[in-house]
Image: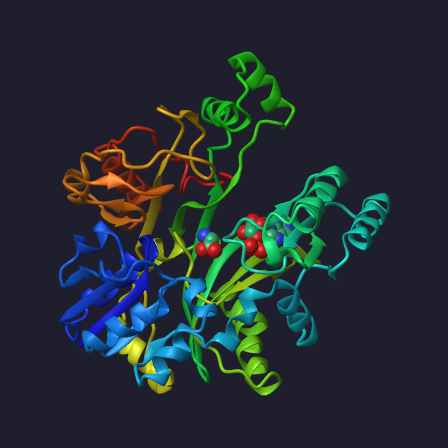
Length: 474
Ligand code: AMP
Ligand code: GLY
């Protein structure tokens, strides 16, 4: 079998690696992939596809290479209708059709849908008028209901969510999204919802449209810095604000909770999620995943085929753990997939074919009980020709030479997020490498990941040191 994986980053390389472990698979193409796509046997980067958005180039390549199936990683090509286009050409694909991507592409629609079908969610309201939204949050804060989260309705590359600590922050978020239109049309509408506190889970399930099965879960670390990394946050602050602050000032800002620790697309992940047992998994399937897939088909007349990734907050209510949905994604998580997929024991090709053919019921989706700890090495603060740049998730330098990848590979699995190989390896993005350690215990997996990371060097390299430690905030 020949497989084409569509993705540019670490998640795509983890998917390709999973396919490469199947005896049925002779070749795995990754489009556009990156230089790290070729770390694994049978895998080849497709350089003639310029980006994940180049739908027609992808279709053309799939036909030319005569692939048996296409597996799509990111939401963008899915919401552009890549699955519809491939199927028109008679090429089977794993991923939802365009009409089914509304679950992720409109947060307002998704919340209304979840409420209608009785899935547990935070209290929320949708707005298309900034003044009404501001009035609502003023009343919310006056009545002492706690904090809110403000979200742009549409796709904003993970940046359209403002988790607020005060009324001022909520008003700022509304202005950013609706008045200054930071996310363009994605911000024409917003959701304002109750901020929940609890255990967050990156939960995934896979469906052929009829049957849906758990597809592993992870704890996703989103903050750019470890909670006590004052030096790191200070450098970021100086680079971001273009304003020098002394160590003493940084410490004061830190104590006042004013030193920035921005949210990112992910700095690391642990799978399985240490707080999710069989009972909680069952609860999430029964209360969230199954109703979503069933009602989507029965009530909305839309079939969901592919990977469903609800972001869940486990909250305690009257002594019971309730899984509340923060959002739904129509694809696998990143870097959660890098921590989950090395543990997949089911043959990836068999699983993909079962999804395509509607025979998922007959396949057992099985994961190893081992732990995987995935740590992202990112392009951090660096002084160069254009002065000091703060680093990921803000502005960063690229084209920095990377050393030590081969050494690190002897200890851990490496999924490249953003690298090229003009001669030696160089950085091309904010997230650069995701290093995945594996072990019988979480501690062993952590030790492997960090020991491999210690072999890798590039100018500005930064990573969190607390991934997988118990009770560290994510
Ligand atoms: P989302 O894109 O909706 O998953 O939001 C991104 C991140 O914001 C989530 O992973 C959470 O960490 C946080 N978040 C979103 N909604 C809420 C909420 N209602 N309460 C607390 N945190 C939230
Ligand atoms: N790591 C968050 C996401 O994949 O959406």
